[in-house]
Image (cartoon, rainbow, N blue to C red):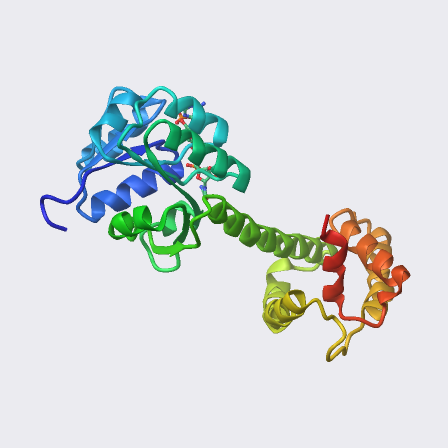
Length: 288
Ligand SMILES: NC(=O)c1ccc[n+]([C@@H]2O[C@H](COP(=O)([O-])OP(=O)(O)OC[C@H]3O[C@@H](n4cnc5c(N)ncnc54)[C@H](OP(=O)(O)O)[C@@H]3O)[C@@H](O)[C@H]2O)c1
């Protein structure tokens, strides 16, 4: 990066904000940082960042302002102390599509430009292979700053609607938590007999990888709304087999509360006459 690279401001130096600021420094960008608790600026100042005395000062220092705070309320609280006219605010704080749309409107009313983002990485991954960030908002604003964003990892622009980055982020997190749910239940069952989770882990990893093709198959069915093609494990059969999961859990002294929601949906869908379809058809019960 050349000596006249665009300067950037980072508001929020928690685990993630510090990693983002660090990646910008590593990429050779001049960085101004601010954090509510000023002590967190020290390690970054030692690496070349400038610490601002207030959020307003930090925002005044750069046209491009990266925000990574706890939640939407803290973002609002901090941004309202600064003058946003002529600034580009890039909010990488986790939030909902509605929060992103409302914040975009508010920032634009203040005379600033706005992009929302969703970080798909944990702090040590930032700037390393595998990390990527969703962005949404005006395409020209994204294009202007893309080179700077690439310091964080892959930059994945998902559309003009500022809510789309959060939508993509939360959809991936939904998939992740669904997987975590299954892993926790599997280990609880294994441990109920005093067996080793570590020894069982390769079986679980292999099984999840083998079942991973569900992601693609289900996507085709969800887009078409047709759950009746190539049915080899019909929903009615799965609803009946699923019954054994809570029964066995109870027998083993394990709670089945993580499994209960899917169990109820399977039973309802089968009772509604869709037992011959693929399990994907449960998605019809999720539409409100
Ligand atoms: N860590 C991850 O794995 C990860 C992954 C993806 C996305 N994210 C998202 O990144 C964001 C930051 O996460 P993090 O891991 O950095 O969290 P964190 O370590 O808990 O840091 C939270 C940050 O928010 C600040 N803050 C909280 N309330 C505030 C308020 N009312 N006014 C001003 N500042 C306030 C904290 O300031 P103080 O230092 O003064 O408390 C700190 O800078 C979150 O939205 C999180 O969901 C995190």
